[in-house]
Image 1 (spheres, rainbow, N blue to C red):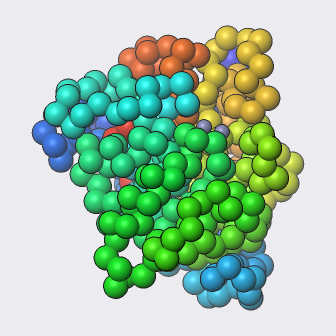
Image 2: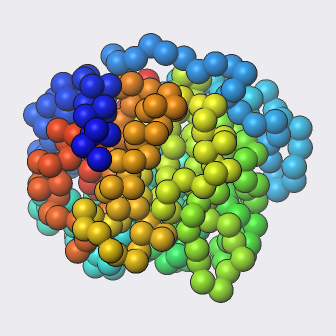
Length: 342
Ligand SMILES: [Zn+2]
Ligand SMILES: [Zn+2]
């Protein structure tokens, strides 16, 4: 295992400078400063090879159709990621009020991430309250990408709150997910359900989005849990929670890609023997996969490796995670953390 860590060190020398910068700029409690920015705009100049960018077809309006130019050639140059929840399902179900001072990672909402201010991945029971704390207006959400229907990722009341807060003139909230999973999304004229087919890329506002198979399971559901590849003109990120390892199909798509960031399911900690590793990662699995992704050149040398879906009791307190993991090039996410890839 130590060789994997060592290789990552060698390959990510710039990461440490960045992390120091983050440390210095974090944790003011002025409202608009609660978001903490990890900017990487000055790092890396590699661009993606056009031929390997996206799959052959795309979905729009619920029906398969030929690839659009927008899906095949993403135009958006910015990827701004805002973590609106970084916890597994064993954190308190109620989020603290906005005026309560919090340190990083002291509480974690249900795992969720906002892309470019308007595309939300997953919508669990805390997400609307976390939005309030980090000054995100639910009315600005245009699209929700669903990974799967566990309650910490899909919460009917939160979805309806977001959908109903939109100006009706702007049209319905678009809700993307596995066709079986979409059956659990509330029916409303303010919500337009759009099925996602594994491996087929669709376009949202200049980004190419691809759902990929995840090794995760929802009891009594036929849905295929998925993770999402998000590709812009020059930057790309894999949002890989919930799930353990990467399935062969998913690897076959990823091996042609070059990622600027990967966001791992890091539910389980360093301890061995926890049966949850069959649907969530522990740290040794993450290190193994990082090693392979670096060796396969899927992770760019300056890629950001970020951990989310952190369990309350399986991982140590956040400060301790930072102390042990940051020097390794692993970034434990916390609610309100922002990563800008541009
Ligand atoms: Zn979960
Ligand atoms: Zn789950």
